[in-house]
Amino acid sequence: MEGMVYTTVTEVSGPLMIVDEVEGVGYGEVVDITTSGGEKRTGQVLEVGGGRAVVQVFEGTTGLDTLDTAVRFTGKPMQLGVTGDMLGRVFDGIGTPIDDSPAPIPDDMRDVNGSPINPSAREYPRDPIQTGISTIDGMNTLVRGQKLPIFSGSGLPHNNLAAQIARQAQVRGQENFAVVFCAMGITAEEADFFMRDFEETGAIERSILFLNLADDPAIERLIAPKMALTAAEYLAFDMDMHVLIILTDMTNYAEALREIAAAREEVPGRRGYPGYMYTDLAQLYERAGRIEGREGSITQIPILTMPDDDITHPIPDLTGYITEGQIVLSRELQNKDVYPPIAVLPALSRLMAEGIGEGRTRPDHHQLSTQLYAAYAEGCDLRDLVAVVGEEALTERDRRYLKFADAFEERFVSQGEEENRTFDETFDLGWELLGMLPREDLKKIDEKYIEQYYPE
Image (cartoon, rainbow, N blue to C red; front, side, top):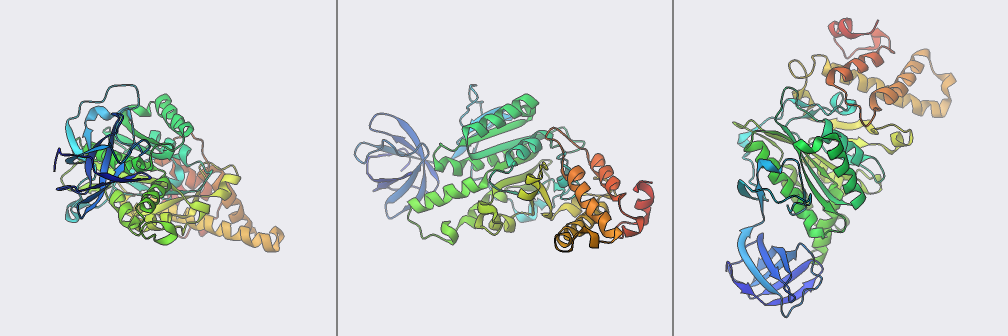
């Protein structure tokens, strides 16, 4: 019952604590825990039934015993106090300020599990977000209300890319734009990098940061993205802001999910991950979108590192099913010193066609990206052929495409970490590269655009 204190802890295992003889306890409610030494901790009900409750302890179970630990069930779910004053602030994974400033006074308390969006009330994602990165803006455009993940690998510069997108992203013509940045399981060095980057570039002024470190309890890693999404929903649907939320690293989130499942002795699914991981990830990703009658929107960029660069691994595999495309980072491009090392050919934005063109970006955008993609793909195929027969066996036309593929990587894909290209700068660069090819080869572009943009 709400407010009732129990001292019937029967087992402590890993991050979990089992309380017997409980009544009226609900799934997901917050638990106040007092250790035998008087220390206060917080937990959440993970499972309940047969008079027994399984509680996950956010601060860890070290120091808890089964004799003198007192547990009080609050009867309330995990909540976050939300307010516009959260902008410019830094919080830990459970919403406690860590920037040496007092906690903001909330305008409202919100359940971190959110409320599902009625499918009939969803608006189709339209209108592009300019990230300043040519391979995203030109080839795999991010659309407002979309969820577009970045698939990376260990050692690849996804942190640098995440920070660059966070400080450069904007909706053209819209001033009410905010970034919610949630880092899960990162090192203290990585946290310092993000803090320093946001503060030095001024991006912190329009951002909310939630940072969960690698040495924080695993269970806090599962709460952090829900905290961040709750803040994003308040900014988007109460304050009419356009919000970009960046979640990194979803692999650390899934590992925490597996760790908790193992502590509960659940039957493991594929590669040891719990069978409900698809549902759990979907509950996070589907909180992106636009709602009819609301001005604001939530756009998601989840970032994950693929174990062993395996795109068929359960984490990227399930993420790809739920989301609307993917941006893939390439170790081969990284070895060529190309930044950002975005592999254009396997990357995809399924909602791009609806978010570009006349009145949004430029009328030639779709045809230009299609032609660049086709020419680059042909150049990459010729690289494989050269490895077999040598460049001497190529025709003059083949050599042009081979040079185009090299120039495309060196000039279009590659750009500086501080380089913020507009849509027009990206398109003009694309046309400049197409100038390396004969006009008659541009079969995917209308003649009127060739007349207007093809370099003489």
